[in-house]
Image (cartoon, rainbow, N blue to C red):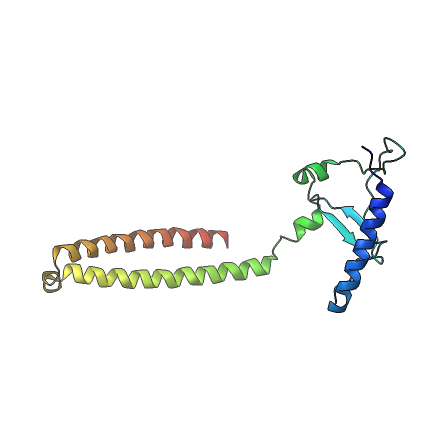
Length: 172
């Protein structure tokens, strides 16, 4: 069964025009008919206004028959968006200036040093409790066990912070 594509297109165009006239009072306007369309490197179809020129148009294959419109050829970027190489402009967008990175490193080092001071203070208070016979006598076995576990956690955190601080200092 063959459908009448011309009539379908006219119906679709009139439906779009009716929808556009209903949405116009709300500030929603249809894209102009002569807006350029293209598929970007990620495989996304982009519609541009009249004032902006599109990038190079995709190659169009000849139609299989007179009734069918010409179809753009499927490129590697269209079928597999990751196949397209990101250009130098795209890579440059993710680069950080050296001064900004230095500032970030200094901030990170300050934060790590502050964490180290708080971990050392907490460890010292736990050790004082564990070494004091009077304080130890006030604890039941469960509390003593938890205190010893938290002391080990503080020691582990201090080792991790020390290695991280050394890594940050080395990269500066």
